[in-house]
Length: 289
View: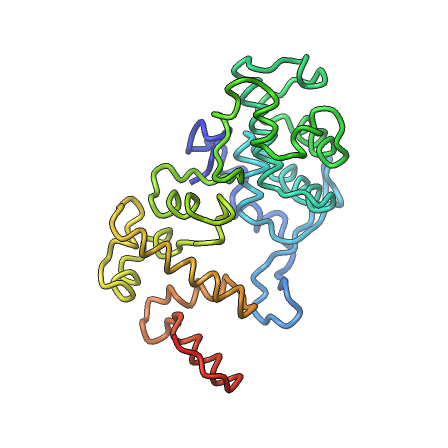
């Protein structure tokens, strides 16, 4: 669920402006892979041919960038979001932390908690793409208010104003841009993750894809596949944490693993015990499930 304007809503009324259909129809020119040896080519290469961002090109974008540098900030300009993705990548900035930092400034501005005296004379209105771009550059070079955001959103909130931290959604100091308040799996995963709000530590696709059938197959109950249920979410989080650890240890693609585990036909589905067998067959090293 997207975090609209720094978690003030979950419905973005301009979603059609930044939809996957618009990206595919207007900007994607070909499929590419993120790895030389991968045959799937599940990434997209996009190009902007006209307008203020003409000549901009790049890979993907991922949903997180669409949210953190778009929906989270009230931006419905897809070309601007694509540009912001390239900008944060070139500067080596985390798109989530950068977006939540700017979102914090925009909400504090909206509520009158900060003024131009705090923001280098800049008005932080929702959706202002010029202000967003300028702030990204300030963060990269630690100029003005960007120097505060460069230390992280939580640290910036503590320095900006008394009570500002309550406008930051984080776990252990790490911010995220998916609203997890109605989803027990994700709330629990973020709460107990060693890194904080890391969506890849226990990426609960059984829950997210409403796959009661897969939950029944693995856990013997459908509840892990019911997003709003609180039952068996501990088991679901542990399973997905173990799955993520396996993926990272083997150096294989998380997207493929998730897709294979969600196959409708049980005979085609691949789960953790299967990877133990595959590993043993390839290496000759016996590995238990």
